[in-house]
Length: 309
Image (tube, rainbow, N blue to C red; front, side):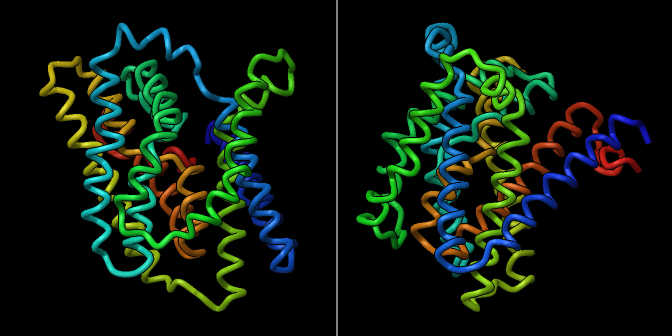
């Protein structure tokens, strides 16, 4: 086993175990809710810190590609999510939440670079999607048949908007700690998302509202199908629009990856089960992204080799 592979495995194990420890040793409904709010606020801070604000300069040169990416993120993917929402129960609800959540921030660019696609286009479209969410997310939520306490959501909006803006402002400061957080954005986000998922899972167990393993399995399979479908149609649509292969591939990665921070925030105002399912979607999404990269580069999955076997 290569040393760098072992190092990666150990880092992943430390992240998972430490996130699990945080969720396990914090007890009490109030304390757990406070921890959930703090973790979610931290995630929004990282989103603001990691935005690629140079995307404004790229709009002129990539206007057609960005237009298709944004159309896909806020129109075509929500339409597919709406079809998946006919699955009964919380699984159907989580697809509506994902459909309204915009595109992920860093993963599409990482996967695009690994798959020899247009990483810059993916980064620009991701940032554009974050700002576009200010307009499109409320519209989609009003269109979708989700039962949400909008009054409570407006009250809690400060826990998302304030840390996000602080993160954006912090970008202008030169500090080694800030730079480290930007460099290790993916690891920090992974830890926060893992911790939020485990915290919410514990809340569900405490409330005796257990989602059975079979339901989680069904949800995971549907999340995989959702990722494949949204990636495939947007990639084909990019090719039919006359874009280069690497641009169409980047649009595929943008479309198949939803913004977890926004999804957590929306899901928290729907049900604890939906929040847990958003966390499950994140892990399935990561696996599917790796699968897409492997298929482009090797023509077959390389999961076993990636974990050292």
